Amino acid sequence: MAKQACPRTTYGQYLVKLAEKDQRIVALDADLSGSTMSCLLRERFPQRHFEMGIAEQNMVAVAAGLSFCGKIPFVHSFSMFLTGRAFEQVRQSVALANANVKLVGSSYGFSDFGDGATHQALEDVALMRALPNMTVLVPVDPEEVEEAVELALEIQGPVYIRISRSPMEYLAKEAPGASLLEPALMADGGDITVFANGLMTKTALEAKELLAQEGISLRVVNVSCVKPLATEHIQRFAADVRGVITIEEHSVIGGLGSAVLEALALAPKPTSLIGVEDQFGQSAQSHEELLQHYGLTAAAICERARLLMGKGAK
Image (cartoon, rainbow, N blue to C red; front, side, top):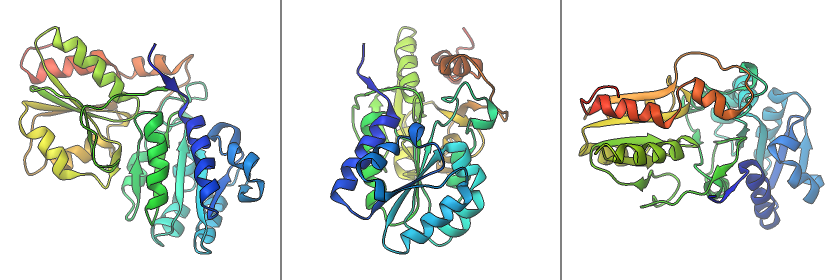
């Protein structure tokens, strides 16, 4: 079995590691520290962890104030509540003010499968991507979770990091980007380029293996930084193929697919977007059950690739 880890635990452990070196780092949480794993920092540095209760708006506003006092606040909640419930404060107090606040949204997409639509963030990338000054990161595996935290610490300004609740495999890269800000070539191919991120990158790699048996060659590119998007890299990876597919655990509106289409607007390619089609989530017995139900699968990528290649559905 491939090596895997819980990205939330990886995140919490690495935040503690960085906090040991940088006393400016503080953590705020909204009654979910045992789930977001900011509890690990609380255990190590209790005086640098602030439990704000179920009051996300207030938490974000306090974090902005702390940032202007020289602290580097890492702010935690489920992705839905951090970006949705506190959107006004994220916009006004953090993004508009260009405050040095790091927003860490846990349990994105369908990974909180048991709690249903109210807890499943399928719009968070669109919301954060629309805000000026905001960097948006969606790590592909536990190693990139650490890289995202380190990059967020280096960036002077607002950052949103999207972290899954589900275990993630460590994935090898054929050609990593110079940093997380650049797309990484996971596996090369000559017919169709698939842009993906998060758990969907592994799904794209699975589709590549399936389509190879049919003579269709996929290039799989991981895009962990949705904003600022490395437009020139996206254009280069799309330039020499017949079509493009995007897949994301997010609405097809406003996320990775939309960003890729914007990047390719001056040099368009036949493009197919795979994501959640303008609807809410629901409760289920497992994360995998919801991914299957909403068509976020290797089979869906294979079907779109065949259509782009003019081979029709199988």
